[in-house]
Amino acid sequence: MLQDPGSERGYNGWAASNFSNPWCSENFIQGCAMRRAQDVRKQLLGIMDRYKHDILSCGKNYNRVRRAITSGYFRHAAKKDP
Image 1: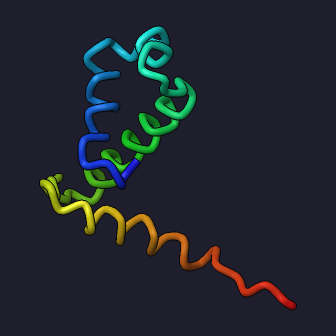
Image 2: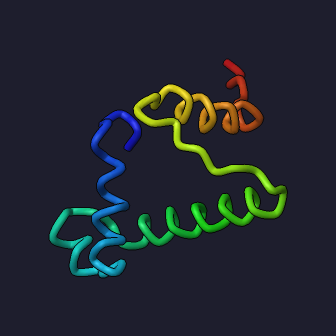
Image 3: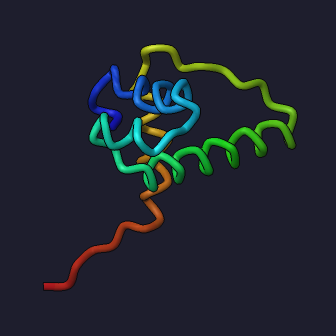
């Protein structure tokens, strides 16, 4: 999703369609994945509101988003034994 700079239009298009499942089918997107993204978005907005942080866009700087997501994976990384 983050490899395609235009992919944020997926969520916005789904929102413009009033979060409809037929829109997801027409655009080859899984509705359950979109609902999960919506839940995560609501959680993040709630956290930002609770701690009185401003909600700022990174604009077209997708590297910031990639870094934020991958930094969360660090704790789940493990080394496989031979």
